[in-house]
Image (cartoon, rainbow, N blue to C red; front, side):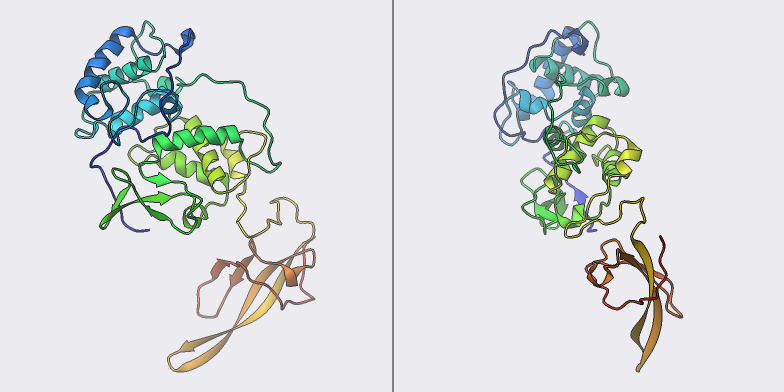
Length: 362
Protein backbone atom coordinates (compact mmCIF):
# COMPACT_ATOMS: atom_id res chain seq x y z
CA UNK A 1 0.00 0.00 0.00
CA UNK A 2 1.30 3.41 -0.83
CA UNK A 3 2.51 5.60 1.95
CA UNK A 4 0.13 8.45 2.47
CA UNK A 5 -0.04 11.35 4.87
CA UNK A 6 -3.37 12.54 6.16
CA UNK A 7 -4.02 16.09 5.13
CA UNK A 8 -4.96 18.16 8.15
CA UNK A 9 -4.90 21.58 6.58
CA UNK A 10 -8.08 23.41 5.67
CA UNK A 11 -10.26 20.91 7.50
CA UNK A 12 -13.95 21.67 7.67
CA UNK A 13 -16.39 20.32 10.18
CA UNK A 14 -18.85 18.39 8.08
CA UNK A 15 -18.63 17.57 4.41
CA UNK A 16 -21.46 18.66 2.11
CA UNK A 17 -24.46 16.43 2.49
CA UNK A 18 -26.10 17.29 -0.80
CA UNK A 19 -29.26 19.26 -1.34
CA UNK A 20 -30.50 22.28 0.57
CA UNK A 21 -31.11 22.20 4.28
CA UNK A 22 -34.63 21.24 5.18
CA UNK A 23 -36.81 22.90 7.77
CA UNK A 24 -35.87 21.92 11.30
CA UNK A 25 -38.04 19.26 12.92
CA UNK A 26 -40.18 19.77 15.96
CA UNK A 27 -40.82 17.05 18.48
CA UNK A 28 -42.51 16.66 21.84
CA UNK A 29 -40.67 13.42 22.66
CA UNK A 30 -39.41 13.98 26.20
CA UNK A 31 -36.97 11.06 25.87
CA UNK A 32 -35.01 13.02 23.25
CA UNK A 33 -34.17 16.06 25.38
CA UNK A 34 -30.40 15.73 25.52
CA UNK A 35 -29.26 19.19 26.68
CA UNK A 36 -30.39 22.21 28.66
CA UNK A 37 -31.43 25.62 27.33
CA UNK A 38 -28.65 27.31 29.31
CA UNK A 39 -26.08 24.98 27.77
CA UNK A 40 -27.33 25.73 24.26
CA UNK A 41 -27.10 29.46 24.99
CA UNK A 42 -23.44 29.07 25.97
CA UNK A 43 -22.88 26.95 22.89
CA UNK A 44 -24.33 29.62 20.62
CA UNK A 45 -21.81 32.15 21.91
CA UNK A 46 -18.93 29.68 21.55
CA UNK A 47 -20.09 28.71 18.05
CA UNK A 48 -19.95 32.38 17.05
CA UNK A 49 -16.38 32.55 18.30
CA UNK A 50 -14.97 29.26 16.99
CA UNK A 51 -17.17 28.04 14.11
CA UNK A 52 -19.14 30.84 12.46
CA UNK A 53 -16.22 32.10 10.38
CA UNK A 54 -16.45 28.91 8.27
CA UNK A 55 -20.00 27.65 8.71
CA UNK A 56 -21.77 30.98 8.95
CA UNK A 57 -23.53 32.77 11.78
CA UNK A 58 -26.81 31.33 10.46
CA UNK A 59 -25.33 27.78 10.21
CA UNK A 60 -25.97 27.70 6.45
CA UNK A 61 -22.34 27.29 5.47
CA UNK A 62 -19.85 29.43 3.61
CA UNK A 63 -18.05 28.27 0.46
CA UNK A 64 -16.93 24.65 0.87
CA UNK A 65 -17.90 24.62 4.55
CA UNK A 66 -21.36 23.05 4.56
CA UNK A 67 -24.53 23.92 6.39
CA UNK A 68 -25.02 22.53 9.88
CA UNK A 69 -28.78 22.87 9.68
CA UNK A 70 -31.57 20.66 8.36
CA UNK A 71 -32.50 17.04 7.81
CA UNK A 72 -29.63 16.34 5.41
CA UNK A 73 -27.13 17.39 8.06
CA UNK A 74 -28.86 15.38 10.79
CA UNK A 75 -28.93 12.25 8.62
CA UNK A 76 -25.13 12.25 8.48
CA UNK A 77 -24.90 11.01 12.09
CA UNK A 78 -26.74 8.29 13.91
CA UNK A 79 -26.20 9.55 17.44
CA UNK A 80 -25.16 12.58 19.47
CA UNK A 81 -21.88 10.77 20.10
CA UNK A 82 -21.13 10.47 16.38
CA UNK A 83 -21.71 14.20 15.95
CA UNK A 84 -19.59 14.94 19.03
CA UNK A 85 -16.71 12.77 17.75
CA UNK A 86 -16.69 14.58 14.41
CA UNK A 87 -16.64 17.99 16.06
CA UNK A 88 -14.20 17.28 18.89
CA UNK A 89 -11.65 15.31 16.88
CA UNK A 90 -11.50 17.38 13.68
CA UNK A 91 -12.55 20.89 14.65
CA UNK A 92 -12.00 23.80 14.49
CA UNK A 93 -9.86 23.84 11.37
CA UNK A 94 -7.30 26.25 12.82
CA UNK A 95 -7.20 24.56 16.24
CA UNK A 96 -8.06 20.89 15.68
CA UNK A 97 -9.07 19.10 18.89
CA UNK A 98 -7.96 22.22 20.73
CA UNK A 99 -11.09 23.30 22.61
CA UNK A 100 -12.14 22.15 26.08
CA UNK A 101 -14.54 19.20 26.15
CA UNK A 102 -17.25 21.36 27.72
CA UNK A 103 -16.99 23.80 24.82
CA UNK A 104 -17.55 21.03 22.28
CA UNK A 105 -20.52 19.75 24.29
CA UNK A 106 -22.02 23.24 24.48
CA UNK A 107 -21.66 23.72 20.72
CA UNK A 108 -23.31 20.34 20.09
CA UNK A 109 -26.16 21.41 22.37
CA UNK A 110 -26.61 24.56 20.30
CA UNK A 111 -26.65 22.55 17.05
CA UNK A 112 -29.27 20.20 18.48
CA UNK A 113 -31.42 23.18 19.48
CA UNK A 114 -31.01 24.83 16.07
CA UNK A 115 -32.11 21.58 14.42
CA UNK A 116 -35.34 21.33 16.37
CA UNK A 117 -34.52 18.98 19.22
CA UNK A 118 -36.06 20.40 22.40
CA UNK A 119 -34.14 21.30 25.55
CA UNK A 120 -34.41 19.32 28.75
CA UNK A 121 -33.37 20.04 32.31
CA UNK A 122 -29.93 18.38 32.27
CA UNK A 123 -26.76 19.42 30.45
CA UNK A 124 -25.32 17.16 27.77
CA UNK A 125 -22.38 15.36 29.39
CA UNK A 126 -19.35 13.69 27.87
CA UNK A 127 -20.58 10.18 28.64
CA UNK A 128 -19.74 8.22 25.48
CA UNK A 129 -21.98 5.26 26.28
CA UNK A 130 -24.96 7.51 26.98
CA UNK A 131 -24.37 9.68 23.91
CA UNK A 132 -24.27 6.59 21.67
CA UNK A 133 -27.84 5.87 22.75
CA UNK A 134 -29.03 9.37 21.83
CA UNK A 135 -30.34 8.89 18.29
CA UNK A 136 -30.58 12.11 16.30
CA UNK A 137 -33.47 10.98 14.11
CA UNK A 138 -36.66 9.48 15.45
CA UNK A 139 -36.82 5.80 14.58
CA UNK A 140 -39.59 5.03 12.12
CA UNK A 141 -41.43 1.75 11.82
CA UNK A 142 -39.64 -0.48 9.36
CA UNK A 143 -41.47 -0.91 6.08
CA UNK A 144 -41.85 -4.39 4.57
CA UNK A 145 -38.79 -4.78 2.38
CA UNK A 146 -38.71 -6.41 -1.03
CA UNK A 147 -35.40 -7.86 -2.03
CA UNK A 148 -33.35 -10.84 -3.09
CA UNK A 149 -33.41 -13.97 -0.94
CA UNK A 150 -29.63 -13.86 -0.67
CA UNK A 151 -29.41 -10.13 0.08
CA UNK A 152 -27.55 -8.97 3.20
CA UNK A 153 -29.26 -5.64 3.92
CA UNK A 154 -32.29 -3.54 3.01
CA UNK A 155 -32.44 -0.57 0.65
CA UNK A 156 -33.57 1.63 3.53
CA UNK A 157 -30.57 0.59 5.61
CA UNK A 158 -28.16 1.30 2.75
CA UNK A 159 -29.70 4.76 2.38
CA UNK A 160 -29.05 5.47 6.06
CA UNK A 161 -25.51 4.19 5.61
CA UNK A 162 -25.02 6.61 2.75
CA UNK A 163 -25.59 9.53 5.10
CA UNK A 164 -23.35 8.08 7.81
CA UNK A 165 -20.62 7.41 5.24
CA UNK A 166 -20.88 11.03 4.13
CA UNK A 167 -20.56 12.27 7.70
CA UNK A 168 -17.83 9.95 8.99
CA UNK A 169 -15.88 8.65 5.99
CA UNK A 170 -15.98 11.01 3.03
CA UNK A 171 -13.02 13.11 4.15
CA UNK A 172 -10.75 10.23 3.11
CA UNK A 173 -12.95 7.85 1.06
CA UNK A 174 -15.44 7.64 -1.76
CA UNK A 175 -17.56 4.68 -2.85
CA UNK A 176 -17.83 5.24 -6.59
CA UNK A 177 -18.86 2.13 -8.55
CA UNK A 178 -18.28 4.07 -11.75
CA UNK A 179 -14.51 3.76 -11.25
CA UNK A 180 -14.01 0.06 -10.40
CA UNK A 181 -10.40 0.02 -11.62
CA UNK A 182 -9.32 3.10 -9.68
CA UNK A 183 -8.47 2.62 -6.02
CA UNK A 184 -7.06 6.13 -5.77
CA UNK A 185 -9.14 9.02 -7.09
CA UNK A 186 -8.32 12.71 -7.13
CA UNK A 187 -9.91 14.43 -4.13
CA UNK A 188 -11.64 17.80 -4.19
CA UNK A 189 -10.18 20.69 -2.16
CA UNK A 190 -9.88 20.17 1.61
CA UNK A 191 -10.39 16.40 1.45
CA UNK A 192 -8.26 13.31 1.10
CA UNK A 193 -4.65 12.30 1.66
CA UNK A 194 -1.52 14.00 0.40
CA UNK A 195 0.03 11.79 -2.28
CA UNK A 196 2.83 13.67 -3.98
CA UNK A 197 1.50 16.75 -5.77
CA UNK A 198 -2.19 15.83 -5.36
CA UNK A 199 -4.75 14.86 -2.76
CA UNK A 200 -6.40 11.47 -3.19
CA UNK A 201 -9.31 9.57 -1.72
CA UNK A 202 -9.53 5.79 -1.51
CA UNK A 203 -12.36 4.37 -3.61
CA UNK A 204 -14.05 1.67 -1.53
CA UNK A 205 -16.06 0.53 -4.55
CA UNK A 206 -12.95 -0.39 -6.52
CA UNK A 207 -11.99 -4.00 -7.16
CA UNK A 208 -8.71 -3.55 -5.31
CA UNK A 209 -10.28 -2.07 -2.19
CA UNK A 210 -13.37 -4.26 -1.85
CA UNK A 211 -12.07 -7.44 -3.45
CA UNK A 212 -10.12 -8.36 -0.31
CA UNK A 213 -13.25 -9.06 1.74
CA UNK A 214 -14.53 -12.64 1.68
CA UNK A 215 -17.28 -12.23 4.27
CA UNK A 216 -19.34 -9.42 5.72
CA UNK A 217 -17.93 -9.96 9.20
CA UNK A 218 -14.38 -9.11 8.12
CA UNK A 219 -15.60 -5.97 6.38
CA UNK A 220 -17.62 -4.90 9.43
CA UNK A 221 -14.74 -5.57 11.84
CA UNK A 222 -12.35 -3.52 9.73
CA UNK A 223 -14.71 -0.55 9.76
CA UNK A 224 -15.68 -0.95 13.41
CA UNK A 225 -12.18 -1.27 14.83
CA UNK A 226 -10.12 1.12 12.71
CA UNK A 227 -12.40 3.84 11.36
CA UNK A 228 -12.52 6.77 11.29
CA UNK A 229 -8.77 7.10 11.02
CA UNK A 230 -8.58 9.90 13.57
CA UNK A 231 -10.50 7.95 16.25
CA UNK A 232 -10.98 4.32 15.27
CA UNK A 233 -13.84 2.48 16.92
CA UNK A 234 -15.40 5.58 18.45
CA UNK A 235 -18.67 5.64 16.54
CA UNK A 236 -21.99 3.97 17.30
CA UNK A 237 -22.40 0.32 16.34
CA UNK A 238 -25.52 1.26 14.37
CA UNK A 239 -23.49 3.70 12.31
CA UNK A 240 -20.84 1.11 11.48
CA UNK A 241 -23.28 -1.62 10.42
CA UNK A 242 -25.26 0.79 8.23
CA UNK A 243 -22.05 1.97 6.56
CA UNK A 244 -21.23 -1.68 5.82
CA UNK A 245 -24.68 -2.03 4.21
CA UNK A 246 -24.01 1.03 2.05
CA UNK A 247 -20.65 -0.35 0.90
CA UNK A 248 -22.26 -3.66 -0.07
CA UNK A 249 -24.83 -1.69 -2.06
CA UNK A 250 -22.21 0.41 -3.82
CA UNK A 251 -20.29 -2.73 -4.76
CA UNK A 252 -23.29 -4.23 -6.51
CA UNK A 253 -24.50 -6.77 -3.95
CA UNK A 254 -28.30 -6.97 -3.85
CA UNK A 255 -30.55 -5.79 -1.07
CA UNK A 256 -32.63 -8.36 0.78
CA UNK A 257 -35.66 -8.41 3.05
CA UNK A 258 -33.85 -8.12 6.38
CA UNK A 259 -31.44 -5.54 7.73
CA UNK A 260 -27.83 -6.35 8.37
CA UNK A 261 -27.37 -6.80 12.11
CA UNK A 262 -24.14 -6.34 14.09
CA UNK A 263 -23.91 -9.93 15.30
CA UNK A 264 -20.32 -11.13 14.91
CA UNK A 265 -21.05 -14.82 14.40
CA UNK A 266 -23.81 -14.16 11.88
CA UNK A 267 -21.76 -11.64 9.92
CA UNK A 268 -18.75 -13.96 9.67
CA UNK A 269 -21.04 -16.55 8.09
CA UNK A 270 -22.19 -14.18 5.33
CA UNK A 271 -19.87 -14.95 2.43
CA UNK A 272 -19.33 -12.18 -0.11
CA UNK A 273 -19.40 -13.89 -3.53
CA UNK A 274 -16.41 -13.12 -5.70
CA UNK A 275 -17.58 -11.42 -8.85
CA UNK A 276 -17.20 -13.55 -11.96
CA UNK A 277 -17.46 -16.81 -10.04
CA UNK A 278 -20.27 -18.98 -8.72
CA UNK A 279 -20.09 -20.18 -5.13
CA UNK A 280 -20.52 -23.98 -5.07
CA UNK A 281 -19.71 -24.97 -1.50
CA UNK A 282 -22.10 -23.87 1.25
CA UNK A 283 -19.63 -24.52 4.04
CA UNK A 284 -21.58 -27.48 5.41
CA UNK A 285 -22.57 -30.17 2.91
CA UNK A 286 -19.86 -32.24 1.19
CA UNK A 287 -22.37 -34.17 -0.95
CA UNK A 288 -21.08 -34.39 -4.49
CA UNK A 289 -17.61 -33.20 -3.56
CA UNK A 290 -14.38 -35.16 -4.00
CA UNK A 291 -10.66 -34.63 -3.65
CA UNK A 292 -8.34 -35.38 -6.54
CA UNK A 293 -4.61 -35.88 -6.51
CA UNK A 294 -2.85 -35.07 -9.76
CA UNK A 295 0.79 -34.85 -10.81
CA UNK A 296 2.19 -31.71 -12.38
CA UNK A 297 5.57 -31.23 -13.99
CA UNK A 298 7.26 -27.94 -13.18
CA UNK A 299 10.21 -26.76 -15.23
CA UNK A 300 12.62 -24.30 -13.60
CA UNK A 301 16.14 -23.07 -14.12
CA UNK A 302 19.13 -23.50 -11.85
CA UNK A 303 21.97 -21.47 -13.24
CA UNK A 304 22.31 -22.48 -16.90
CA UNK A 305 20.49 -25.80 -16.44
CA UNK A 306 16.82 -26.50 -16.97
CA UNK A 307 15.48 -28.75 -14.24
CA UNK A 308 12.24 -30.73 -14.42
CA UNK A 309 10.58 -31.19 -11.06
CA UNK A 310 7.45 -33.00 -10.04
CA UNK A 311 4.73 -31.78 -7.75
CA UNK A 312 1.66 -33.45 -6.33
CA UNK A 313 -1.39 -31.24 -6.16
CA UNK A 314 -4.65 -31.75 -4.33
CA UNK A 315 -7.67 -30.58 -6.29
CA UNK A 316 -11.34 -30.46 -5.50
CA UNK A 317 -14.02 -31.90 -7.76
CA UNK A 318 -17.72 -31.12 -7.74
CA UNK A 319 -20.32 -33.57 -9.07
CA UNK A 320 -17.85 -35.04 -11.60
CA UNK A 321 -17.64 -31.76 -13.53
CA UNK A 322 -13.97 -31.22 -12.94
CA UNK A 323 -13.07 -30.59 -16.57
CA UNK A 324 -15.52 -27.70 -16.70
CA UNK A 325 -15.03 -26.32 -13.19
CA UNK A 326 -13.33 -23.03 -12.50
CA UNK A 327 -11.63 -23.25 -9.14
CA UNK A 328 -12.68 -19.98 -7.53
CA UNK A 329 -12.55 -21.74 -4.18
CA UNK A 330 -10.22 -24.63 -5.02
CA UNK A 331 -7.14 -24.85 -2.83
CA UNK A 332 -3.91 -26.05 -4.38
CA UNK A 333 -1.24 -27.52 -2.11
CA UNK A 334 2.10 -27.91 -3.87
CA UNK A 335 5.25 -29.48 -2.52
CA UNK A 336 8.39 -29.30 -4.61
CA UNK A 337 11.63 -30.90 -3.30
CA UNK A 338 13.83 -28.20 -1.85
CA UNK A 339 11.01 -25.66 -1.72
CA UNK A 340 8.61 -24.62 1.01
CA UNK A 341 5.03 -25.74 0.76
CA UNK A 342 3.10 -23.26 -1.34
CA UNK A 343 -0.56 -22.49 -0.81
CA UNK A 344 -2.50 -20.55 -3.39
CA UNK A 345 -6.00 -20.02 -4.67
CA UNK A 346 -6.63 -21.21 -8.20
CA UNK A 347 -8.47 -18.51 -10.10
CA UNK A 348 -9.88 -18.94 -13.59
CA UNK A 349 -7.84 -22.10 -14.02
CA UNK A 350 -9.56 -24.97 -15.79
CA UNK A 351 -8.49 -28.45 -14.72
CA UNK A 352 -8.38 -30.58 -17.85
CA UNK A 353 -6.13 -33.40 -16.70
CA UNK A 354 -7.09 -35.41 -13.65
CA UNK A 355 -6.90 -39.01 -12.45
CA UNK A 356 -10.05 -41.07 -12.88
CA UNK A 357 -8.96 -43.28 -10.00
CA UNK A 358 -8.60 -40.46 -7.53
CA UNK A 359 -10.08 -41.05 -4.13
CA UNK A 360 -13.16 -39.11 -3.11
CA UNK A 361 -15.04 -38.38 0.06
CA UNK A 362 -18.80 -38.82 0.40
